[in-house]
Length: 267
Image (cartoon, rainbow, N blue to C red; front, side):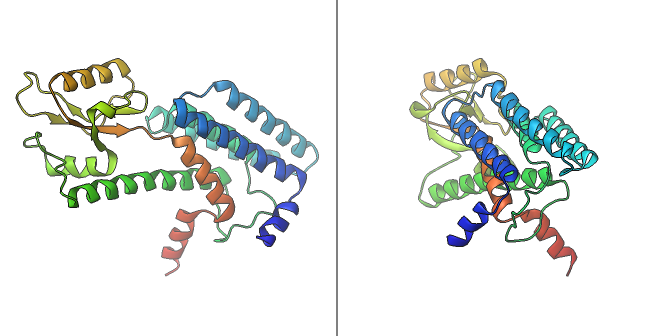
């Protein structure tokens, strides 16, 4: 504990400020994300602007290389926007990564992660560890559903001939919950479609339409009207929380995926 305290105290003021601003930004927005799933864009503008001011100061004093700074931020911004365009990130996640890249374009000076490996383009390590943190949620869902199944719960009744692969995907991406406890959009979306007549078997779906909240609410209403007791739902990820976890992991441990890859290649 004392060594960690000494390491924090040994950080130069600029590095300490970068890390503090990043933790405050991600900590606050993660809390809001879990509560409401709505983040005001002004937050990213404020913290991104503070990061930009720090970068301009360090370039002016010769502490940071201008071209290296530009490459790191531009590359991270393009990657974030591409992933957002592909639907893998939400709008808040895209802005969070861009602001985080502005605040942390390079590995913080004086911070030595235990694995000793981070990407040359430091924000890539933040991407990587955040993605791994997100995958951990899928593992949690899988273990939860397996425990229910082994405990005697029937998870796939009333779905007829749904293919095995679809059921396996749902085991790692969805939750079967009491329809009376469904929170609905923007927290939960249906992973099944009601039958047309209320008598035939329902259909499982893998990818919910998270852009159509009214459609999702209508599906839940129809399922409830048909007397369905439990329903498969997609629990939308508060991904900003995983970005926060990924940031802390990168600071303390390093780039886990890069470490594993180098270990495999060195065998």
